[in-house]
Length: 183
Ligand SMILES: Nc1nc2c(ncn2[C@@H]2O[C@H](COP(=O)(O)OP(=O)(O)OP(=O)(O)O)[C@@H](O)[C@H]2O)c(=O)[nH]1
Image 1 (cartoon, rainbow, N blue to C red):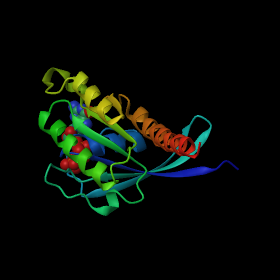
Image 2 (cartoon, rainbow, N blue to C red):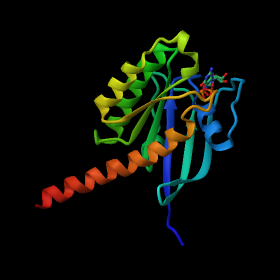
Image 3 (cartoon, rainbow, N blue to C red):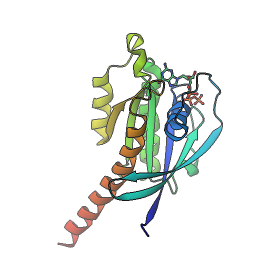
């Protein structure tokens, strides 16, 4: 029987950027038109990446801002993060920078498996954040960047496959560092 690995991933970002819509589109395959602020919600899905199966446990959080204090439950036992801003909101992009810093400190400044997502790409005419800025920010963290649209189901599957791959990539890089020290 194939081994199913458990992965806990937290989705974080400012209010109304589309965190719930992305998770819902990924798990239920539908777009939610109405805005209903989230308190906290969890989703589970078995995801196949290559030959491996993963039990992905997603935590969809309430919108955070630069003043939010992140609870320990967002740090302890979490394998990876999907950090979401809206391409139509510069403020949501600025909030992401501060959330990342808090997570980084919470994890003792170790490398974090992160996928940075610029959502609402279908609203490109109303853009306040260019793709190149998202790309640059993700690169500064050594993370992956994607633009998505929960409305058009653009890359919603790809985000969650990618975060599983990022978790493996970061874990492997630690393995390699450890091997280097032993030599
Ligand atoms: N055009 C467009 N609208 C979107 C997209 N994603 C989400 N929305 C809309 O944006 C609003 C907020 O979406 P949510 O998914 O509830 O956002 P959230 O980040 O979970 O919000 P909080 O619970 O406040 O943190 C809703 O009206 C969605 O229909 C998208 O990709 N494109």
